[in-house]
Image (cartoon, rainbow, N blue to C red; front, side):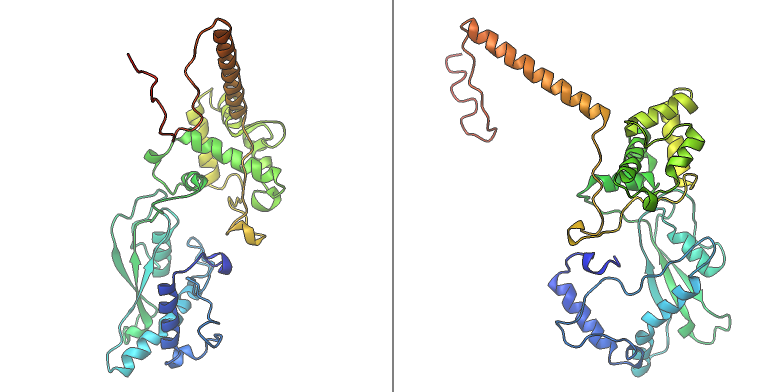
Length: 334
């Protein structure tokens, strides 16, 4: 979202609905200030209206967000006035991944703690409407809007499983759904790969120095894999416990002790499809598994050659598993 041409393909039905909505807005005064290209083919359809940067802790950007809400819904109030209906509060849905600060943002807009919020996923379990007033006079509902606080939403099917691991590292998935050691090792391997790509100064500039400060070694130098980093932290800082080491690594990352970190890289080419590809380098375990597989293959070839030298007749080797001839005639007469 917000990347324009990387938003993805939009179905023809959604495009037509968006075009009709834009034409409807132009009928009212509130939509005249929008500079849009003429003609149906010239209209760019995007699911993003405005992109705003908001800090739910300090409150930075809250007023701009409120103004954007009233500006986006101004045509709704004008349409009700033309029909002779009374003003009503705008309704705004707040949706997103779990544990990204939806309830905290609502509390910051309200100026008080109304929605239940905590630093863990799954706190909000039901939908609830919360009314926000921009003034305390209560003379008109034009200055009011209702926020829909909703539970976090995760896509039902992820093509790239690395996205699921990164969500787990960001504490957007419940702890019962993933293994701490696997996620911590993946996170270390991911950050090291970003530095090896030459993007470390942009995505995670302080991570190597913070690792030296907190763990006593440089994670990028040498041939350490993500699991090697995990077990080295376990041996040096956690009395040999990889589970405690994984929790320490994830906690340091989530609380910002490793400095500002961006896990995804902005696209640079048309083929990037929304983000640059981070291809993880093979780990030591991958090399060991590959060597073991090559050794098994060599022993199998030696056994086949020995059986042929002794005159034993072996069943034919089937290359295709989809063949209809698999198993046919091999057990005739048994």
